[in-house]
Amino acid sequence: MAEISILRTDASPGCDARARCEIDCLYLGRQPILTRGGALAAYELLFRESETNRAFIGDDAQATARVVVNAMCSIGISATLGPHCGYVNVCREMLFDDTVMLLPPERFVLEVLETVRVDRPLMERLDRLRRAGFRVALDDIDELSDELVVALPHVDIVKVDFLSANRERLPALAEAVKAHGKTLVAEKIETHDDYAFARTLGFDLFQGYFFARPQVLSTRRADPSRQSLLRMLALIASEAPLVELEQELKRSPDVVMQLLRLVNSSAYGLDRRISSVREAILAAGTRQIARWAQLLLYASSGELTWRTDPLAQLAGTRSRFMELAAARVRPDSERFGDCAFMTGVFSLVHVLLGHAAPADSIAHIGLVPEIGDAIVARAGLLGALLTIAEAAESGRHDETVRALEAGYPELTSLTSSVFAEINLEAATWSQVHEMA
Image (cartoon, rainbow, N blue to C red; front, side, top):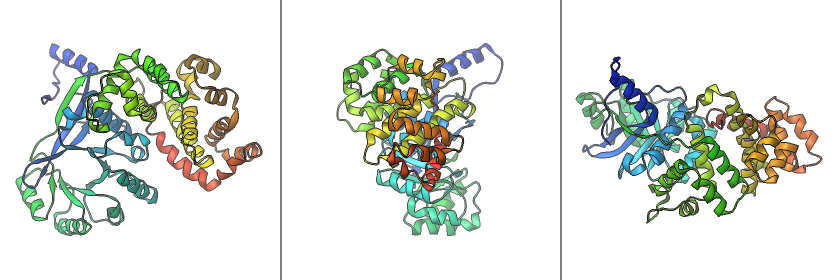
């Protein structure tokens, strides 16, 4: 892709054309990361919402979601990265989100934002991601803090901010990081003196305006409809036959295009190109497609962002809460966890579709009875978990669990300490998933 110039700010007719283009296009920034010898080693992928080579980010998680979708589905990994890997900024919410697994770990480095709180749950999560093959980088480090020392055993790369770091303390910082065997990246290098100093300190990789400003890539927008994605999620939840999922996808060419881009990316390591909907479903698997659809849902450009849409926040938090609770109640059943998540997703969909009651929306979508009955009649263990999730939203989960334990002994595993842990993790989804 060619580099896009900075958007003009005058009132000429060209501005109207550019404004229309911004509505119809998707954007992605990338900035080179170089080796000590000056060779291209990787790109950092950056959120952009127009030709203007600047980012105005109000929601870190949504910005990351759009970067991922644009890189993997809209523009494509090959066009975005070539043979190199990409660094993607991730906030705490996205780190704990299963959709991060959509990224092929051999092509992407997870760059933990400096705003992320370092605690035990984070360290455990980073360890799991690294065992899955991801490399983890700490972003915007400017001092040898206690927090950095704690985090070093759980990461692979440390990016040091040369604009804000104290020069006199940089040698000690670099020495400590290298002593742990970590890769050192000097970022925000803006002068030759910065570059020379970083090389002297033993930095491995370099990034900054001294080498290159970010480049803006763009492509035409292909925004899949939420109705299509909701129907596809309903089919997956109902364990519909492959032919039904294939037929639903074929009704939405834009969704098919996104799926084919995803599967034909390097994410799946296939030795041939996938050209049919059926092959794409078989290659990705329905569970992965469900996660991908959820990512598209909250990355799509609706009128309301996640932070300004309380209904979407509630649906996201509830679905994740139910999935986590299901894992405690039936730890050996992945299917039950998936059904619990879907129950949470669809428990508020009647509002999204403008129906007066849940029964109307369930009939309209065609959910599997197990999930539909849980939503409409609070039937079964899924219905009990939905009741508990609703009670948890108003702080009444303890007494609700006690009231339901007689009918569902499995619920005794949901102790107060378990609730505290589940609530903490589920709350992160209120910052991430846009189910509207």
